[in-house]
Every structure is written in structure tokens, then in C-alpha cells.
Length: 106
Image 1: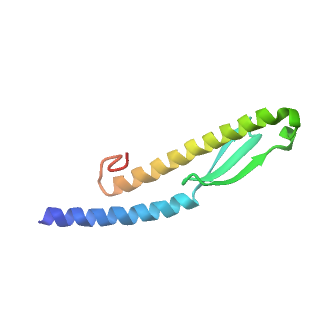
Image 2: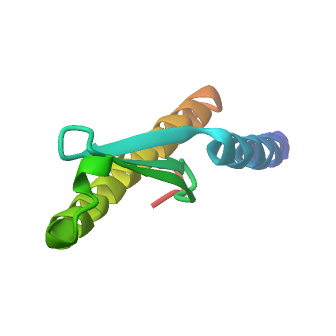
Image 3: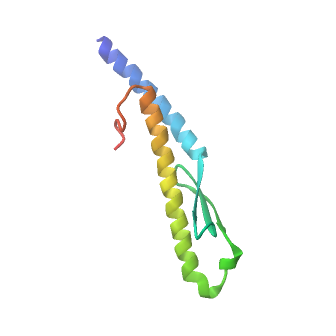
């Protein structure tokens, strides 16, 4: 019975930590760039895009396709960084609770 109570306590701790982490991920911002910094995308670790900066030198009608490609690349760079930040937070939580990496998360 003590094992069951311990597991329930650990599950409650995990749920509390997950809620905290979700809040932190909403506040944690990463920036993805492309074109040597000509395009930058800011997003939260929850994958919400917060802003895009485009160097004025790219604002030429004949450069539209290049600009579009750079925006996509910057978004993907930001997404990879956001995913890495999320993984880092998850590992910190599971490690503190003595759970194996990836426990219940994929």
C-alpha cells in the first residue's frame, strides 16, 4: 500500500510540475534566424510565433521568393530551438522526480 501512496504522491508532483512547465514554456522565447540574420523569428517554446523581423534590404519585389524561403527557414530554426528548450525542461522535471528520461512523453 505504501508503494501505491508513493506513486500517487509522485503523480501529483508530476502533474504540478507539468503545469508549472507549461507556464514557463509560454514565457520562454527563442529566436530563429536565416540569411545571416536578415530574417529573425521569435516564438515561445510552446510554438507561438511572437514576432518576425525582416531586414529592409530584402523588401524588393524581385526578391520575394528569397524572402519567403528565408522566413520559412527562420521559422523552422525557431521551432527546433523551441523543441530543444521543451526537451530540456522535461528532462529537468523527470530527473527531479527520479523518473527515466522520456517517461510518459513520447
